[in-house]
Length: 86
Image 1 (spheres, one colour):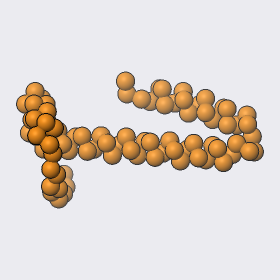
Image 2 (cartoon, helix red, strand yellow):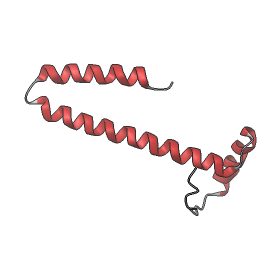
Image 3 (cartoon, one colour):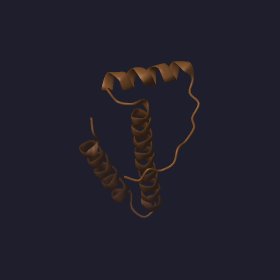
Image 4 (cartoon, one colour):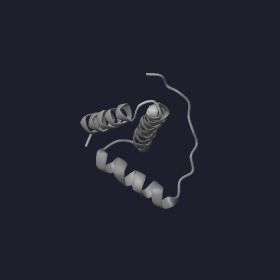
């Protein structure tokens, strides 16, 4: 695993208390929870970006074929429902 670099973040006392509580509950260090949270945030942002790009592409095609847009939207919704972790 790449050791990476450190980042200094200032958190409010309330957020820090919740972070420490969660880390204790899970039996891990505070930094582990922070790393997990950042990784999850970046993953969700990448998914949201991809969805925006797909929607923009579909909208660009809308003038050419309303039927294609309806089919693509239905397929995208079905795929998102199937692939989303609930």
